[in-house]
Image (tube, helix red, strand yellow):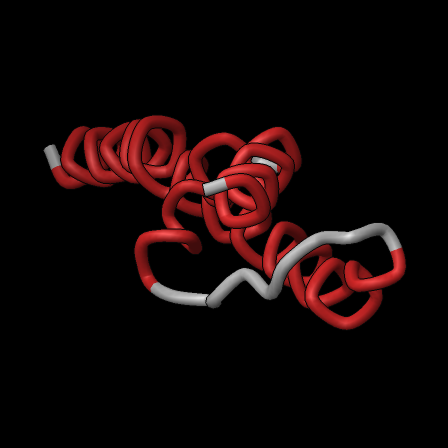
Amino acid sequence: MEYLWIGIGIIALFILNKFVLAPFRRLFVNIVVGLIVLYLVNSYGYLFGFHNVPITLVTGLIIGIFGLPGVLVVTLYYTFF
């Protein structure tokens, strides 16, 4: 009977990892990579005519959800509007 509960616990941890933790890891990696690219755009974007993009929670979430295309959209938004 104890082995059954151990098996159920292992399956529950596998499901938790698959459906909850893996998307958060992907979101975290997208946010980190996107903010590094956004920092580079803020540092060297004046050479190409880009305006300074503030790094806020909202821009971080947009970049985290959409990745590098999110960086492009946020940069173009702050440049032209």
